Structure formats: C-alpha cells, structure tokens
Length: 128
Image 1: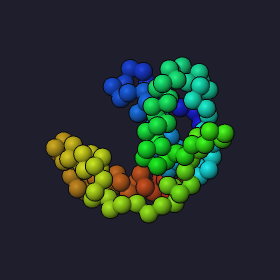
Image 2 (image 1 turned 30 degrees about the vertical axis):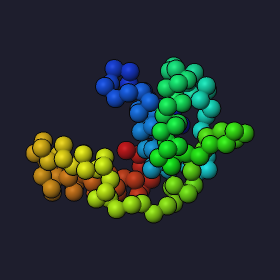
Image 3 (image 1 turned 30 degrees about the horizontal axis):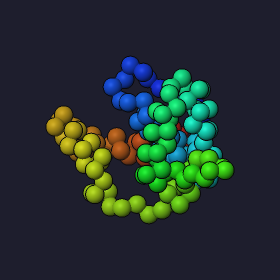
C-alpha cells in the first residue's frame, strides 16, 4: 500500500496514515489478516518519525482495525472487517460531518446522492 501524505495539510500526519489505512481496508486494497509494514519501515518509506507511525498504529489498534503480535507485527483485524457495526446514529464522526454539511447548506438530496455514488464505488471495487 502506497501512502500519499500531504505535509502542508492541517490534518496531522498520524491521522492521514490512519485514514488511508482505513480507506485501504474499505476498498479492498488491504485484506483481513494482511500484515502491515513494521513501524520503522513505514516511517522510513514515508519520511516521517517512527513515533508518528506508532501513534497511527496505536489508534488503529484502539479502534479495532489492527491486531498486533510481537512476532508477526501489525495486521488487519479480520474480526473488525466482518463484525457488525453499531448503529450509525451513534457514530460521533458521522454526526459531526453531517452537522458541518448541514451548516454549509448541503441539502439532504445532495448528501444522499453523494453517499450513494461513493458507496457504489466501493461495492464495485473502486477506491475513494
């Protein structure tokens, strides 16, 4: 998986790494059980501090996207990928995003159209 980090962006680098790994899982680029590069390797490849990559991996582990093993390293958690999700109405990031879009004047129809298009892209094996 090739990460594209934008060092000029306001989003912290560790969150960019986290977000791209989650997107990779969603679009099938990263498969359940697949091993991720060791922290030092990914840090060297991306040109960031090892602590930054470690912070991203720890966040992904807390959220259940990764499992770690001292011998095998970090890998995509197969149980997380196939698990039932909690109700979407309880998802704090979704609530915040919808609030921001509402304040920005996005209509319900525009939102639903965009969601349908993005979901269809994922179902067809595309990337976001």
